[in-house]
Image (cartoon, rainbow, N blue to C red):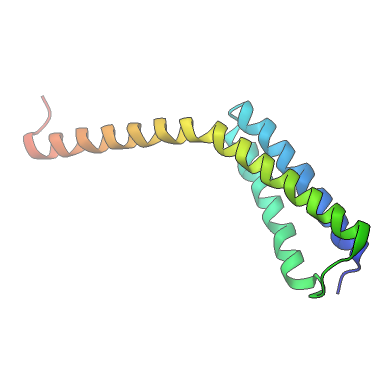
Length: 109
């Protein structure tokens, strides 16, 4: 089991990674965003496997809550930045699919 300080260190690392993810999304650097997300997911897995089941108390608990809030705020920013790109990608995929169906149905011109 991890100590409270170990757990807080992992949460702090995740908060840092999510801030880096916001920056990557702002640059439209989807490869970097994906790599950072994978690193963050590895930390989540570590916490699932090793975080003690008893809740933290006092200042440690408050620090954990603050780090979670930072991550949630970053997550919201990431979604705000990626949703327009996802919508554009969806339109492109749908357009390509429609074109393919027309070519399959009627042949190329």
